[in-house]
Picture (tube, rainbow, N blue to C red):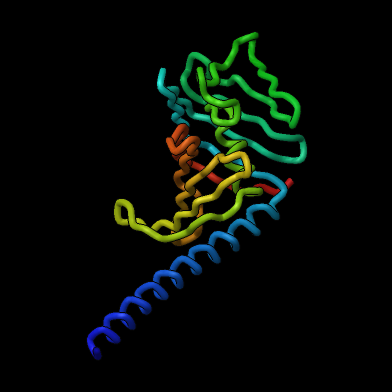
Length: 191
């Protein structure tokens, strides 16, 4: 009987410690989100890989959001470098000598490589926090947060455990990772 009580107590303490860690990770994310969203703008450079059953698309993109709106500029591949997309609620317009950016074949519009970084910011802003924890990757402690939108779009965001700088994100749809984002620069900007 005594052993059963000890075992039950140990299990409860283990669960409570896990909940405490999760709550701390959620608190860190929520604090970072508040500071991030208070900034007047953002600049994100990232390697974006989108895939579906037919193909894989890889781009290096620079996302900028400020008082003038949102833009996504292609840095690589070189063939389409400097194509810039201006994004509004109603449309996406491309500019650069009439070239057209391939946004991924059967991918939903908001899961295309072009829309990956704007979608990331929208989910950070509006997504429901589903879960949060910490893990270690390559000797670096990371805070991991899962966010979900009402339309079912899910993002898992990995952030540096030290300063909460975003480093990776996966965009999931229908239970499959559709877009992988490796963030090389994430800055809050002021106008």
